Length: 224
Ligand SMILES: C[S@@+](CC[C@H](N)C(=O)[O-])C[C@H]1O[C@@H](n2cnc3c(N)ncnc32)[C@H](O)[C@@H]1O
Image (tube, rainbow, N blue to C red; front, side):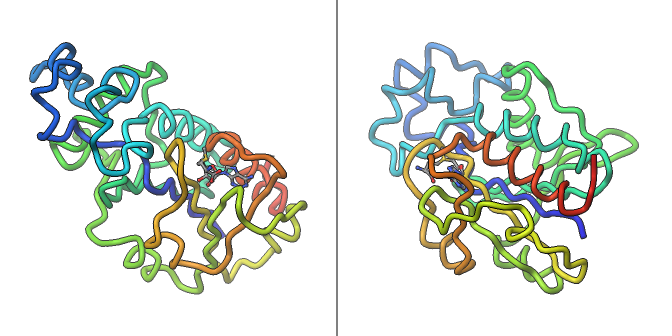
């Protein structure tokens, strides 16, 4: 019954070693400040241009806004949303539905850099962000009866929520939304499912798509 939301290929990573000596990186980098260690194309654009897949990298803001939308949704507050992020470097993390992530962008960047460095985020009493060891395929295999939707502006247009999420409590619906700026999903993602779905005639920002997908699911189950 919970919706499993996966932000896929998120542009989230520590600044790669090969560009750490670039002036655009050195200008802002401090080994004592976590937030300065995360790749961010607003700051590091000139250093990133030779990185493979650079158009999909260095966009922590996209994941930040998507997470704020997902965590703050009635679906999550109701206990019916499971949230994972999958990064461009194939790291996967599960978010505790009760985590209150920083609204401030720099503090969010600090949290994610700490996550990459320490491997998880925990308090004395709870695990807030935990790693999943394995691939997205391994993750999906942990759930019975999965129905995997890959959301893309290039998918088949579905224009009502009942068609998208017919009420079926036996199914585990996965919603994959890209956490990157430009370009398309890699082959590894595309081959996870033949259900490539569009929810608008227009290409949307990832957080707008996230909001609408969650709302569709809430409408199916009457969650307000
Ligand atoms: C900024 S887009 C990535 C760029 C890419 N041109 C695209 O539209 O797929 C971020 C993500 O939002 C979702 N998205 C954007 N437009 C969508 C649409 N019309 N229908 C469904 N999902 C969409 C997709 O998951 C996409 O990967």
